[in-house]
Length: 628
Ligand SMILES: Cc1ncc(C[n+]2csc(CCOP(=O)(O)OP(=O)(O)O)c2C)c(N)n1
Image 1 (cartoon, helix red, strand yellow):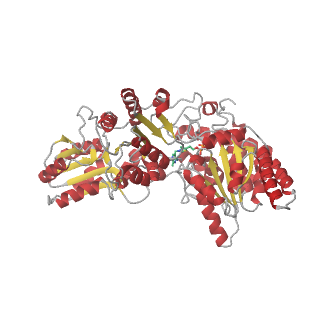
Image 2: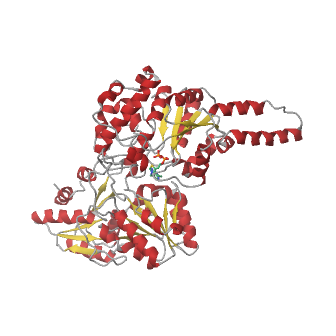
């Protein structure tokens, strides 16, 4: 299918009359098919302006229509795994008119939010949680004697996360009524990986319809049940026959009824299957196959590039603005350089090759690159094993997803003081993706982990020296955390990197400003504003947050008598707390103010607007220092 013609408004008829899911029940299957095309146009028109997860949403248009056609939401509950594919659901559940505000401050969130709509049954953002949440909700329903359907929609990518398998293991023996829709497009963000993914591809190639399963089941069930040896022989025979005809024995053997694969772009077929499943007892898994990016040529051809995308031109598929070289690019370049010099250097990603800048590394060093799937915990312990085996592993994970692997960092890496490098991308406020994706907790939780050093560059260029130090000189685990994008107010790369040494970027008498990572540049800007008010500032770039440059911090605190630690991270328990304790314990007497984010979820919106809202822009810092 080609690029849609935006001016073709013959398609806008049905969508304008859909304000709630019940409105879908009036439409025929043909009309639903036309509505699906209208929704695609609407999605493209809107997401090309706001940016967002276009490819996954184009892929689930028919699936979402079929679900809402069959279910009685919000009484029935849908839990969307990751939740990046809920745009169609939002459009159908009364949020069409606000859709242009998607991912903007005070606008619609890019993920399900129970606070936003009664139709959003559970908040998601991190992968592989849907089956657990759905099972819990189904159990609560049963215990309370209530009656509604609970449905988890999980992608094949999300199925590679350990939690999803833990949940299937539990759901299989649960006997509770639970519907799991496996939305299989063969893709995670990029091509899906691993044995489970290969297993699903094999099933996709054997498209037996769900009716076959029923007939095979009743056929084998009709066999006689007498005699012990005969029974055991029959049991083996039944399994063999079933495995010939029922494609997904894995799910069946876990205790789930499996139906599929079903064409996830055929509304009628899905509606029939969902209706049957709704009336069944026990946990049921329906496997639907979809095409990521469906209907928009560019996204179908390059689904990874259109997974999460900045504003783009519909006609060409090109981004409206190309950014400068960002932190992830520089990290990726540096990794390639270091791998060339030392063949022990290994890169590990948990399904984020492109996002973490490792695509070139993957091409150049295939044998030393591991995409482990959406499995952050496993990624970290694999790294521990690789370090134990004498290689030099670097695990690149977004700050927010590293939360998953807290115990693996502590138990498997840090307590054994292994040489594992953690490249923590998207640290700090991430902006559009919002609450579930903010990288604002890492310093605080990493500060509790023994033996772990933490670095934080103030600019993309300042990052250059850090992986080199980590891989050639450092002994023990080390994390380098850096933000999204390329924005920075100050370069700093000309100052050579020295472990555990900060740099004094500006000398003053009245106050000390310490900026964490790229907040250093914003602190410098605040210092300029403060100079105009007659307040002169020491500005420190700490670079190593742990072990910190105590000497530099204390000497400045003694001189100015007033310290401000500024970070786009939560205030509690991190570097700000460390500096406060340091100064208190050494009797310097300088009051320390920590400027950061409050102890609550931080919403979505452009990063600058979030900074402004929480007083973390230069003006906000100036005001805080002046006490105005
Ligand atoms: C714990 C965690 N790690 C990484 C991600 C980033 N991420 C978002 S969507 C996605 C791929 C999901 O693939 P799939 O479930 O198949 O959904 P699709 O987009 O293909 O529909 C990844 C890796 C995440 N959301 N959560």
